[in-house]
Length: 58
Length: 146
Image 1 (cartoon, rainbow over the protein chains, first blue to last red):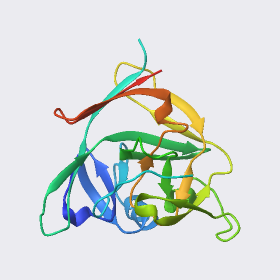
Image 2: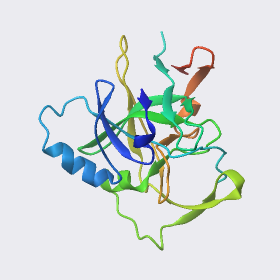
Image 3: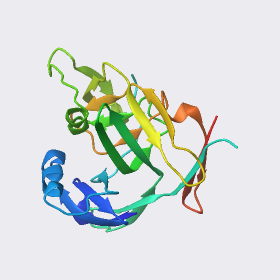
Image 4: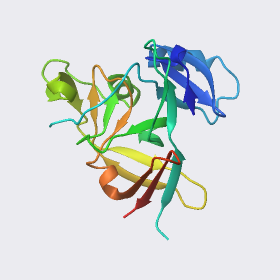
């Protein structure tokens, strides 16, 4: 799956390897999808904005 | 034969002036609790992370409630930067699905972070269950259940 920079920092809904909706809020994205037909086989991603690195120390 | 899943690395375009596209090892995972199910298509596989850390928005979706002050913990990431997390009080279910195998399901606790840039899979309760191959030149991640 390839995300463009317009997806950076956003929650996206993906179906058949295509982004079908996006929103900065996961709850709002869920609401958007409720209005769409054919909601099966949708996955979600929160696309990182910028670089991510480093371990977590618990 | 042990449960084995392979997934191509995900790619994303950077927002800095370079416009570069970088790739990262990713995994499609379904998180479930009760009737709630959320499938994430490209969770970042981070062997350097002690725990699986999910954005706090998913805690709401999975039906958890936290006292934002009393339940918080402070963890550290790269550059010793502090961030706030909330541990799940009970395990959630992880589901991996791939052709040729029955879905692999198990439960483990996770953490939720207030400022979390992505869905991140860590070692305890998840990656420690697998042998992992990071095939850099082919840009493929392969996990085989132990």
